Image: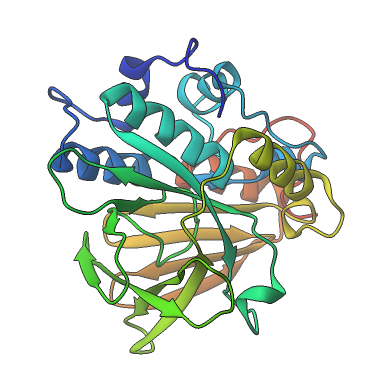
Length: 276
């Protein structure tokens, strides 16, 4: 993955509001993961402007830490990986197929990034992911073991083994939707490690292809304690922890920019149209 020479762990921890002495233990992994998820928004404004965001360490620090912007999965999870490695964790990047709205995992390419994290003294690795950008996304890492259910920070997840013809176990991360009372798939993946060049290719496609949903319209997500906010084009949606959903449509560009600044904490770059 990208170099570590320009990564500033102290600045990153300040950005996410993590206080105290960090250690390479499970408690620190949970705290850093949750703090990141609650402080940095998901957003695709670079892709809307026609360019794939840089995954270089210096650029991620300038944009997301010092510039207080957000990003999408490659940016978020690269930044988290750099922080966890600096803390002493062993981290392996993984890639998955988003299954939300898909007929089968095979109908989607591997375009989502997540992390396998090993913790000294723990018998099993953990799945970490701060870049999914959805109301049911992980707030805390979960044990990377199929057949297990985890609950944390008000959300429930489970890993289910899927049948397939490949040599590696295929897992699907599912989230429990309190609004419907059902489990819903988020993404499917194997534990095959991926390299920096793989994510550069994925990032270029997702950030520049006219077929990518992220190049067509602005898409922002922000998770708070007890609620989740999203802006998809002009549709602003608030989802509460109990599953209650409220929606309203923004029709004025100035209002949309104000909402993004005040609610998502992102100053919209000049020349970016939020409403198309």
